[in-house]
Image (tube, rainbow, N blue to C red):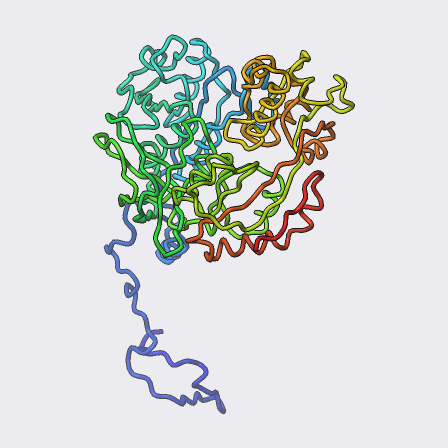
Length: 525
């Protein structure tokens, strides 16, 4: 009020007989905030590009400001191309060559993470008129249009022709692998357009490298926190020169506190490469190879990325999957027994899981066995065994369609040995018997895949395990038992992750007992 120049807190006062008693002295200006002390008229409060958090909202409220102009989130239309695409959740006709649409959803998640608003459009078939209609609609409704697939300059890839005729094509192709067939242009009344490759790894790599920064800039978001780590190549890698390579890699601790780096790219179409990778190494166009032990810089996908506690490579197996569920932060690459031994020999993995008679394959590889079990293997057939399959001879002599495992699998190796033994009995060659088995060369990667093909009616028999047949309600024709062993790199046998895996194996009697045809082996000494 007029005439007052200080404030005393009420707790230091007392009203007594109509008078005010003050118990502490105050100086002029005490507990007084003159107008303009917080922010004075004409002072800069907030500048363009400031993200409005609770602190900024509080400042605006203190200034009496109820509205401010803000930069809107860019709307990004997403169109995936290809007659073969099916939305996740819809029925998939694999026999017709249909596949689930991966790119629409991974790219939409990337757009949202970068500060944009994704808008999904129906799939565009490989038809010019349909493609034109969808792209024009997306251009009318969105600030940026992203498509995936149909970017190559071939007769069936038409999207680049739509852009040329209905907009402006500014760029076709970048010198980067994966992701060379990239398109950049405009559509309609100036809507920006970028065409991504169709393969999921290529599409997401190009999006992350070129598109996400532009979306963040348009949304007014700062660059995300990034992190890098130095590591040594675990093995030599050779490359074709001429294009910059963005190589997805994984990390592993060698047990002495050093970080090793290994490639995980299994092809542009392998979406598992994305979740098995920890970051990217940029390999310049003029580099022909990276030597074993060569230092590289890994651009981590997130500052929170760490090497897994355990890295295993080898055979796909149902008992193994359940044991791994009891280990903290494992990473397991089911690349088959051969690849498991190779990576153990090269010093990449902590452990290898190997199925079948190791024989000469283990020669020259120093390893410590952590545990073992056996599994019953043979032919998985439909429930009721309608074709009366009783053994391998029926597969050779009968008119049956068959689904095999891939060439790295220990199951396929044992099947090949069984075919060779049958050929010896008949006085013929293994090659002749293999030629008589329809589908012997149809290799499936996962241990359940042949059995699932049988369950779906796409095959009369498949190579598999009794445990798988039992779980799917199918019949099984036994061809033998196969040992499975977990082998550890001796230099990493005391790593905490390896110790945890060893303990989980020792405490998993219930896992082995619950699987048909699986028996635990003797504890390693």
